[in-house]
Length: 542
Image 1 (cartoon, one colour):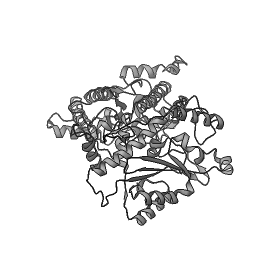
Image 2 (cartoon, one colour; image 1 turned 45 degrees about the vertical axis):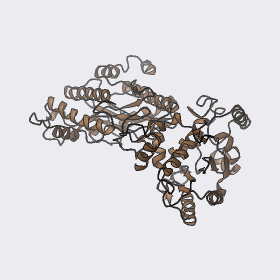
Image 3 (cartoon, one colour; image 1 turned 180 degrees about the horizontal axis):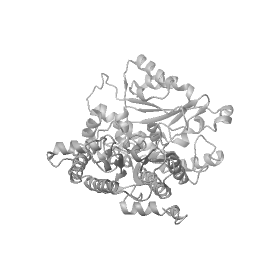
Image 4 (cartoon, rainbow, N blue to C red; image 1 turned 180 degrees about the vertical axis):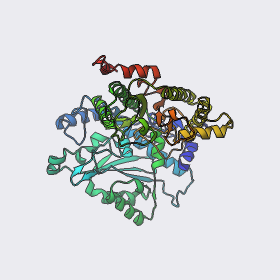
């Protein structure tokens, strides 16, 4: 994270020093920069009319028969001006250019020499994900590497992206793709091939994968660049071998670039904000239907199947992670994923689930009574947690809520106070740290994480980073009281409750609860759960 802080100071010297990542790195402000006659950086990445017509013509000729969905093959998902759902080609080109400019600026901040070398050029290599197999020839559903998708929009496996920036700040992008292969395509579907990769993905050049080693050596020999490659995160063994060999030949270390990518991904562009709104709305409305249709006697597995089905019916690709569907005391196991028990008539049901749409994920938790009616101990704890979450959300970007860590500390203290009020914490406890400790005892997990292309997005960005516009994160307080908590009244034992929502700080600095459509008010929740069977079509409008 030192790289992020140094880059922040370099690019935005007048920005607030407590923010580890500057808002000047917003993707929607990303621009490919060139040097003007005055020496200043200017100009913008644009897609001209000829390029648009060229891509459109290729798509029509191919009838969308490429290695991924297009606006021709999937007009119900992708608009004519988009490369993938919700994101235009120009934005991908801007991201690539901005990444290389950020790396260059960071290296230049050290003066004439960086990492033992004085080269002004940089080369970054990033591999796609590879296909994974559950057994033999049976594959898992393919999911692209998030960083690779963020920079290319390419959904094919085994591809490689090569980015370079030279002394004149010219950014070049090259894709290495699997070649066209009629036999392989007969079994696994069409490939884009390097022939069509340039117009489709907006890169400078494209090559067959077999030429990777040769081109890497050629570019490295000409530029003598600093080499950026995250070996630990590479999914392609042959690529890692090539890069280690190149590093040895050029006598240059392989430098990790994840901090630069995470700095960009942390702050969502307007297009990304819209995708986050969409994926969260899909999950929220699907949750409402599942809660309305649930009843005692069902299996947790049935609810798993139901939330998966309802999200997909709203055009989500799939669930974002294995969901937690926990009835009764199973809810006191924070990462319970067995999902095999039946719902009892007096059980609360805790479901933690989200979906992925257009490469962006949602993450929601709701807890509701299987019977449609809370017991008194359940109601006491639920109303307390519901009130607590509302107060925490209201604290965002204010004292006690300016970072995710501050939200956690505030949550622990408030939870300790509330538990004291209902008699679960001794009245003699008055010290702030002791009360926060009691809160942590009953909620032993952080209450927030960043959210985006991955559920636990940008994991190397510290949670003490100041919250700024463009960030998306969760707020998820919980309370878990095991059957073995002997110092808690028996009626509260075996109860687990969590309420989780996804928040966006939009470009105007306003806090949006992206999952607000998902019912959580205790009275509204009971009414929703009690309506089952009274109107067979009611849930469809939720």
